[in-house]
Amino acid sequence: MPITHSTRYDRMKYGDIKLYAGTSCPELATRIATHMDLPLCERDIIMFPNDNLFVQLHSSVRGQDCYVIQTTSVPVHRNLMELLIMLQTLRLDSAARVTAVVPYLCYARSDKKDQPRIPITARLVADMIEVAGADRYMFMDLHAGQIQGFFSIPGDVLTAFYTLIEYLKAKRERMNKPVVLTADLGFAKKARNFAVSLDVPLAFIEKRRSGNDSKAQALTIIGDVKDRDVIIVDDEVDTGGSISQAVNLSREYGAANIYVVFVHPVLSADSANRLANLPVTEFITTDTIPVPPAKLTLFNGRMTILSIAPLLGEVIQRANEGRSVGELFNE
Image (cartoon, rainbow, N blue to C red; front, side, top):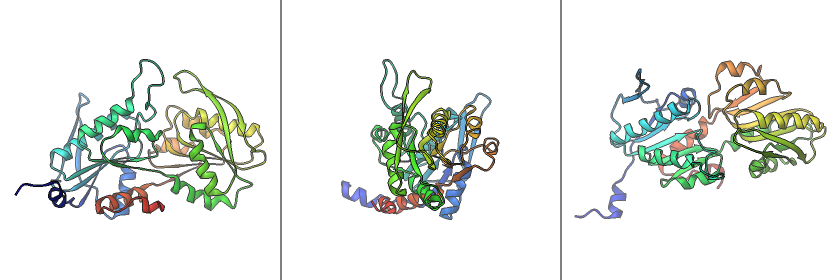
């Protein structure tokens, strides 16, 4: 009898969860596996003397539901190629479904043509992930929501907001007239969610950016921060320039204690040194990107890293079982 669309769908069953990790975030991958009470599947990842990568699985994944956990931070191109090769390896071994679990997506800022003669590299990365063999994706806090439109495959764009806000709520009562301050007007909508959840006012920094060197000039604060504890929020910290300006401007406007909250600790170049020297009470971030011990030491205990492993573990479990992810957030 011919296989109709409905019978094909009925026969399509995903097998057991198989967790694979690249080399970019082994601690996070281990935390996810521990939370799910599952092992990380064994594989070999070898870099040859000519910088070519080789991946080999230790066991078959035929008919299984496979997840590749790999963040694409520095070294970006090594980590991205590793992700793509692992996705293809699983696809060629006849996995029933392959999901790319990417806590931090590289090139996410290159999401539009806002200057002449430039690429849209985020779209290129999306195409490569699909061509490599991913059936689904899971990302954390994309820089721009429209990146979801670059993919033809379904996926889940998750947020660390709930993880961060629960931590902040526990500190809320010990703060003095707290106010949420966004270092970038582009983050204003998400900053408002922080302010509403904490039931505190919202302030903004007006700034202007010019050129392609990631430098921006902070101009003024819109809102009241004088004699208040300030919670500066952003999606990621790269060079630390915007955060440094926000902290220093807050001090100029009379802020009391300053807390810096962000999702992705990119911390490129000497940004860790720059941030560590700021008059900040506490830096609060997540483990979407591993922070090297040498950089973490610079903060002298002032950096708190919250794990997104329970969130990703729960979403992976729900994806395997075909249950709603939105229910986790009452959506």
